[in-house]
Image (cartoon, rainbow, N blue to C red; front, top):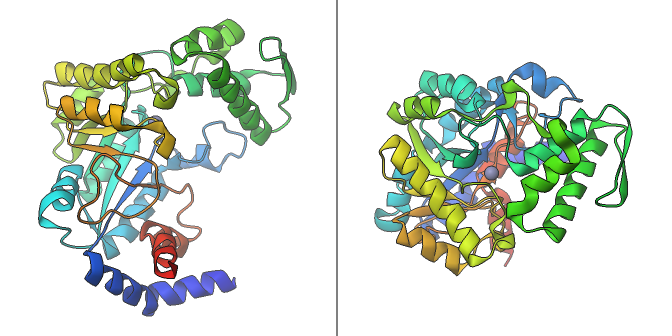
Length: 343
Ligand SMILES: [Zn+2]
């Protein structure tokens, strides 16, 4: 309660503006880049046992709340504008870019109409291996499997482990544990083979959980508000790929999108995007392909002079309307601002 009061005070009555003013005078205005994944119906997000109710997935009405709140304080700009401002002219005004990773069908069905209604731009980062596919990306296949098991416990001979599946949280925990096992024991290009050998059809998604089709991507590409970027071919963590494999993962996604959509792909999002998930080799591959920006999941606000191949982002919270102040606090990069003033 006290924390919330302080946030309201800071956000609406001065110190926030003062803090940002100090920062702005020193380094210019900032661009916060939000990243989300699935945009689902409100009913799915409200159901505590639904496997799709994962951090990083949000609902139709929450996206709308976010857009309305952001519009009061920020310019919502495109990735092209952000890159231009960060690299050359400097950031004009406090701004936000909306980005959505992994290319789910709901980004077409639910998200596009909201973006059009409010006339706000967004970038969709696509993994081309699952476009037009009846399969999910490898880590989603693992989640599908652990949620499709009817029993409350499962023993998997391969990992020599028994997994407690007595609640949705425990099923997630089991899925993440199995992902760790895969990463520690197999090369990424074997992940799917191993998952399907253990899970069979249980790894397959429902039709409502498919990724976009090429036809939908072509329609999205025609929308002036939408920018299409690449997010690797299979969404393997690049840190676990050797140079040849990571080059393939990056190049294939860029080239598939360029060929099918007849466009130049300019923007990339590293799968997972933590600091250990990309290196100078990946940046060289991106530059050779003519990619002009790459986003991470390293938290923070971007200002003039930002390395365009290590762009910071902040995650899209699931429930914004519960605590709008917290959302603005987080999007405005105030935690990082306080940390930098302390140093
Ligand atoms: Zn992703």
